[in-house]
Length: 327
Image 1 (tube, rainbow, N blue to C red):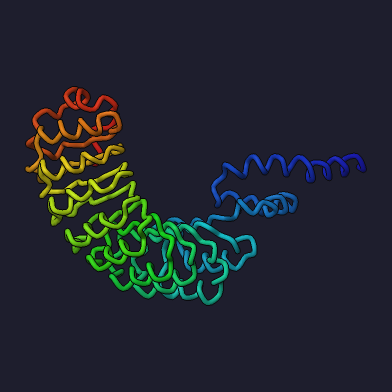
Image 2 (cartoon, rainbow, N blue to C red; image 1 turned 60 degrees about the vertical axis):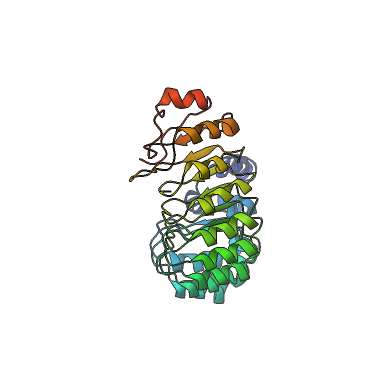
């Protein structure tokens, strides 16, 4: 019995920590939490690695607001860097107010906040949550029609270091928001304003003037933009991914300017209703600048590009591997 007890002690003190260190680095957070209940030794081992508790993932979970408050009240999450509430249920302004009042210090190191699909959050919720996370770098609030320019004003005021911003589907933001973003986030690397239908050339132009570090720009379904704005995309020397799906007013002149983005890897030009102003001529210009970098090119919506089958495109862009972005 004594030998068995000694062997168990060695197992718990030496073997378990080594195994858990390997396994825990590959397991989803929810599975890690389950492992806490297996045994006291596993519980101690997992808690001894702070790096395992930098993420809170409540993706599509019910009662997510109360779960968030409960989790942030635990010591192991006091330095959390990433919170994912994408399509989580029961997330409203009042839950974010509870987080601020009860766990404000736990968000001081937060760098990534995903509120995609949390449609009950308003400008007030944005004000509350951004006021508690000054180190935020990545903010995403896709598909929220309650957020307006007021919410974006709170964001840029409270969070000075954002480099990745997803406002896709926030249909009530206007050029005012983009002006604020352009003036405050000049180191911005990624911007998604898909279906922000109140945005005009003015808002995009301010972004293109000020945010020269942009690498990813998603302008999907913004049919009101014109070549006056598209031409200025040439000011982005680091641009790699550009989505212009639905760019009905884009012409050869605009795309010829975009071709000057020599690091472009992915370009989406498809459109359900057709992009009429783009022809074979601009593809030749694009090839002269980007033939070696482009790996994704979708021109299925450009009905005036006649030479657009796979073999014809590969002659101009030999490194293409993807010919269709949106099904």
